[in-house]
Length: 103
Figure (tube, rainbow, N blue to C red):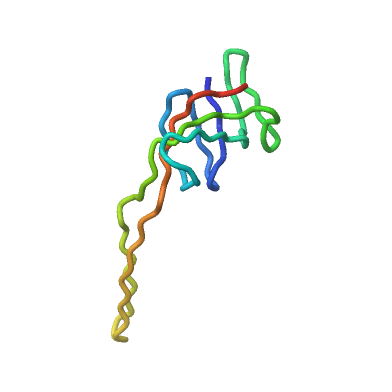
C-alpha cells in the first residue's frame, strides 16, 4: 500500500515505514503530524486518485529530526566591472517517518 501526498509544494510517494526529507514544518522530534492533502492511494483493491485530493484519507507521520542541508555557494560575477558577490544558503528540512495510511 502506498499514497501520494503533497506538502511544501512537492509531491511524495510514501509507504508505511518510509523516511523522507520534506520542507521544514513546525514541531519537535517525536511529535506526530498528519498529512491531509492525499492525492492518490493504492492498495490491494486498486488505485484511487482524487481531483485534486481525496476526502477523508489522511497519512500519519512522526518527526524524526529537524536539520539543515549542506551549504550551497551562490557566486555572482561580472567580468571587467569589479563586481563580485559571494553568499551561501542552507535549506532547512524536516525528516519524517510514515507511521500509518488511513485509507
